[in-house]
Image 1 (cartoon, rainbow, N blue to C red):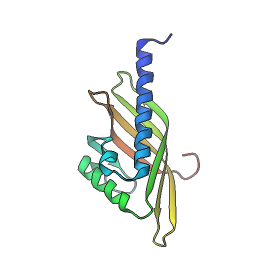
Image 2: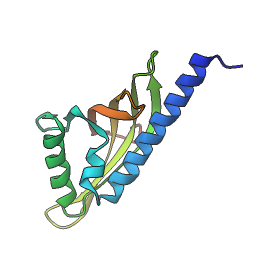
Image 3: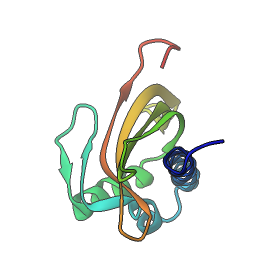
Image 4: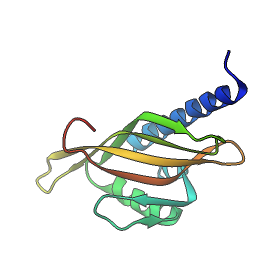
Length: 142
């Protein structure tokens, strides 16, 4: 029989995985900037490849709004690994992502990559992303 700590860690991993998957589904829809941004903490940092670090929700919101306006843009990801640290207040997810957009000729360009997000659990039990970083994967081993 599982001990209380092990059950709590399993429950937190399940909730964190579900949160990351819900966020990906919402981002893939690309329709509600404010709901997409709500998954980041107020003090979050985002590290987009080849771009300056985005600090705080307003900078992140501006980036997301601009991305969603890019013709043919879409994004999705799938967590392959979910870890919750002892104490259950910090965790991370890591996995594969997919970005798509139209190039200058109008052709859809797809970039497969990998990501890591660091999460912090708020006092109300909700997980919020505090660090978000991704890059392209040179092969299918993303």
